Amino acid sequence: LHGLPKSIISDRDPIFLSTFWRELFRLQGTSLKYSTAYHPETDGQTEVVNRCLEAYLRCFTSDHPRKWFKFLHLAEYWHNSSFHTSIQMTPFQALYGRPPPAIPDYVEGSTAITTLDTTLQQRQVILRTLKDNLKRTRQRMEAQANKKRVDYTFNPGDLVLLRLQPYRQQTVARRMSQKLAKRYYGPYKVIRK
Image (cartoon, rainbow, N blue to C red; front, side, top):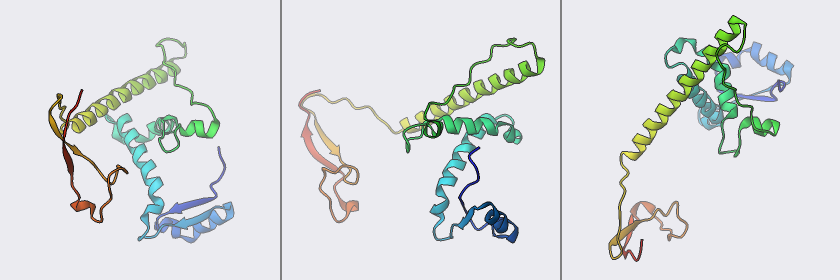
C-alpha cells in the first residue's frame, strides 16, 4: 500500500544477519540497521506497538487463542483507528487527513447470501465480545487504581499537610537530593471549601 520501507531496524536475529536477507534488502533499496545489546531502546517503538497489538489480539481471542491470525486485520484496524496521545490523533487521520470510517453494525438477515450473512454475524459477535472484554479490562484497571485512593473531606479550620512533588511541580524549590527532600509541607489551615 505504501511501498517498501527505506530502512528497517532489527535486533541481531540470525535471520536478518544472513547473506540472503541482506542481499534481498539491498536489491529492494531498503537499508537494514541493527540495534545493539547496549542500546535496545532503538527498537523500543516496535516493542510498544507489538505490545498494543498483543493486547488487542488477547481481547479478540480470549476464547480461541490459537486462531489469533484470523483477527489480525481487526487488531490492525483498532490500532490505526485508536487515538494516540503522542500525535494527538489516530494514525489513520495522520495519514489520510480525515477520521477513520466506523464499522457499521450488521442487521441479521440484511443479505440473501448465506455465507456473507454468517460472516457478518460472526463479525458482530467478535465486536460485541471485544467491547465486553475491553469494558471488563477497564473496570479491573479502575478497581486496581482505586484500591489505594481515599476521598478526604476537609472543613474550614482543619489543618492539612500538602504533598508536593518537586520533580513534577516547578514551583517547589529544587534540592541537591530529592530523595531527602520534604515529602509534606505545612500544616496549612483550610480557609474554605
